[in-house]
Image (cartoon, rainbow, N blue to C red):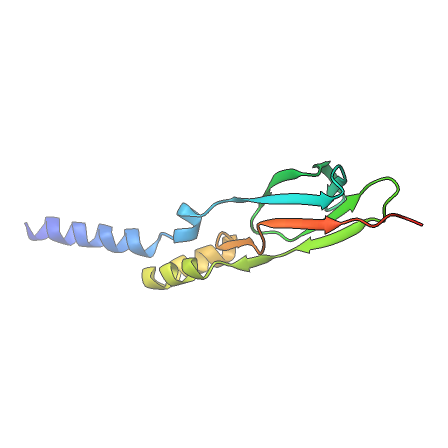
Length: 126
């Protein structure tokens, strides 16, 4: 009986110590709604055309992005979307011990985009 209790205790300790909440349960991508006025602007993300507004993109949550709006007859507009650390993941990792903090920080899985939607108003060229 004592051996089973010890084995079970070691398993629970290892499970709590070697897991990281964001790595296990966090989203790897983040939905970003992109719109413009007027509609129909081409959307470029980090230089690659990704669609026409309005569009919803799933982007990796651990990277920053430069969003450029282009439409013939209008001036281009650029927006930047950055990442931020989800405070909830940090709290859960701290409760789990040092190893989850290290894992989530190293993998970037506790990051998320700092906005859910990006919009731009394009001005006519003169």
